[in-house]
Length: 497
Image 1 (cartoon, rainbow, N blue to C red):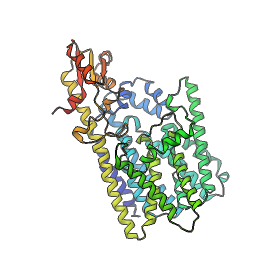
Image 2: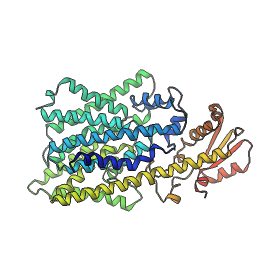
Image 3: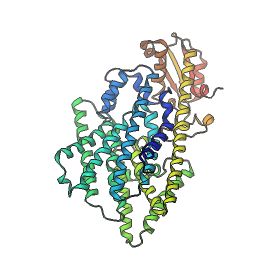
Image 4: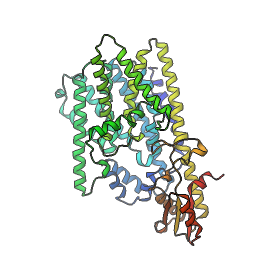
C-alpha cells in the first residue's frame, strides 16, 4: 500500500471510473443555464465579484464570453475533472508527509486518497462544471498555504523564525484560496487538525495555536480586501456575504446539518431518513466513547477538553460558511469538513484494530465501499436523471417550436420528479433534484435552446417565458389555446413513455 503505483494509481482509477462520462455527456445544470444565457461581457464578472470571488470572476468572464452553446459547457466540466487529478496527487503527497511527521498509520494516506476521489463534493464540483470548475484551484491554494506554514513550524522554534518571504507566500496563497472559492481555505487547517488528533489529550501546542492564528489572520485580511474591491468597483456585495455574528445561532446550525453530513462518510444524508439520523449519531458516539475509554491513564477532564477542541477545530475549518448570513450546508461547501471528520474516524479504527492484516482488510473493504457509493452518488443520483431531463426538454422544444411562437408557458416539475423512474430522493439542492424545479432555471434554459435552434439571440430574448408551479392554473391557461404560444409540462414530458 506504500508503493507509489498503488498510492496514486488506485485513487485516480477510482476517480476516473466515476467521472469519465463527463468527457462526452451534454447537459446543463442549474446556475449554468443563467451564466451561459447571460454571457455578455461584464455580466458574469459581476456575479462572482459580489460573492467575494474576485479571482474567479475573470475566469468566468473569459470562459463564458467565449462559448455560446450548451454543448460547449462540457469544456468546463473537463477542466474540472482534469484539474482534480493533480490535486488528488498533491493531497496524497502532502498527507503522506503529515502522517510521517505525526507518526500515524501510513494506511491513512491511501484510504484518504480514495475517499477524496469518490467524495460527494467532487461530484458537485465536476458535475456543476460551469459554476464550480475552479474549486480545485482554491483547494490547492488552501492546502499549500497550510502545508507551508505547518512544515515551517515543524522545523523552527516559533512562527517568528519563518522567513518573511515565506510568510508572505503563505498569506498570498491563503487569500487567493478565499478569492477563488471561499470554502477551499479550510484545507489550510487539515495538517494542524491531524497534528492535534495525533497528540492524544495533550493541550494545544505552539504549532496548533500558531496555525489557528494564521488561519484567522488570512481570513480577516481576505475580508478587508473583499470589502475594498466592492468599494473600488462601486457595487454592493451580495446579501449572502453579510457576516452573521450570532454565535449561538451558528453553533446550533453547525451541530445540525453540517456535522451530520461530515460524519456520514460518503453516504448522502437525509433529514427524512432514520438510517441517516442514526448513522452519524452512532459514528460520533463511538468516537467520543472510544476517546473517553481508551488510554485509561489519562484524566477524564483532559479527554473531555480534547473532544471539545476537536469540534472547535471542525468549526474553524467550516468558518467561511459559518461566518456568512445563510444557514445552508450544501455539499459543495463540505469537502474539508468531510476530510477532517474522515481523518478522525479512520484514525480511530486503525488504532483500534491491532493486527496489520485486519487493518489492511479494513482499508481494502472501505475503499471498495467508497467506490461503489461514489459511483452511485454521481451516476445514479446526479448525472443520469439530469441528462434525461435536459434531453427530453430539448427534444420537445425542437419538435414543437416555430419562430412564430412568442410566449412559452412552463410548468415546473415537482422536486421529487426523478423518484418515479430512477427511484432516488433529492438531497439538499444538489443530488436528485431537477434543474427546472428552480425558478431561475426555466427562462434562461428555454431561451438558450431557442437561440441554438434559430441561431438568432434576439428572437430568443423576445420570447416570453411564463412559469407555473401548479397544474390547475397551467391547464386553465393552456386551455385558452392562444395563438403563437407553446406549453411545456416538464413532469409530463419527462414521464412520457
